[in-house]
Length: 230
Image (cartoon, rainbow, N blue to C red):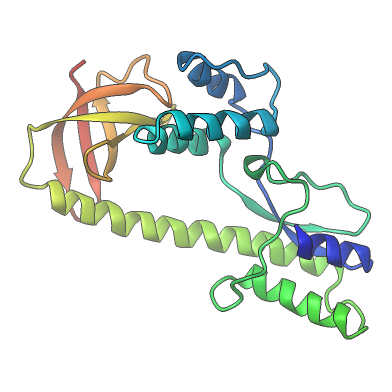
């Protein structure tokens, strides 16, 4: 937030990291209620932060599962160009209005853009990018990040399928990490593996705990399929 506010104070644009208000806030409220915690009916990032802090202290062993479910429901982040007098959404997950990436220019292009903006501001030089150019760069960075994440996930899925190749028929405790028209996914609690529920997925939602049995794997495609047993 410091970098973003610094640039804004000097009438410079910036690249913000945005996580918008979650569309499935009601599900987060339900998960909290299952843990005897009442969240407000309308999205409230501060209230969510307080809930997570309290749950981490109360049940540190299960907190990673809760955190994963909430992260999935919050949705992905994106890069957005912000003018000094603009009003782009903040980072809901961090409960902050002004947030950007700037500390890793060696591996994230948005950080490099921010470093260039900072350098120009500190040296009293003109803004090196126009608004339209920054908009295009922000959109490109978001798209490139999505592509890189997909490749990373594919490699991880193939590695996980290879790990479980000899364990067909075994049963595992899991937590639902995704539920939509495209399918229902679970993450195992004993090993960091995620797969699709192909049988018995009706009625499952993100955050539910479910017992599953490994049905099949395809190492090349990275497919890991489970069926719900209870």
